[in-house]
Length: 125
Image 1: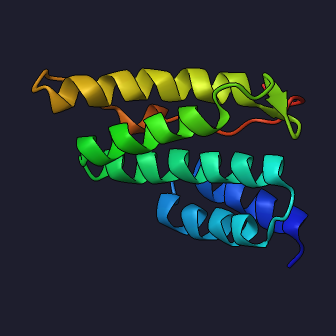
Image 2 (image 1 turned 90 degrees about the vertical axis):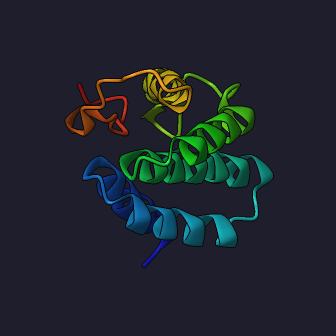
């Protein structure tokens, strides 16, 4: 499977809440990537994916750590990157990061996992 098809596969896995599988798919792309900017981007997506994997398993410490690593990697990337609404994804990740931090501090949180973010392309609503 070529990189483009793997990338679409990973996005579909993410959007369907298959975070463990998505991590494997994105990691395969990341390992093969030679462009440093793209490699860093894929690494950031891996951190987001692993963050949601931890979050949905109520591992708030792991989620916070992974989300922060994602922001360190791709928080300064353009708002739209590789035709993805990156700003929208990162805005939603920030909300979940804050919820995970509060939960880690013992504050009760409404964790409705049905409302997790999706990776959207610029032509999607």
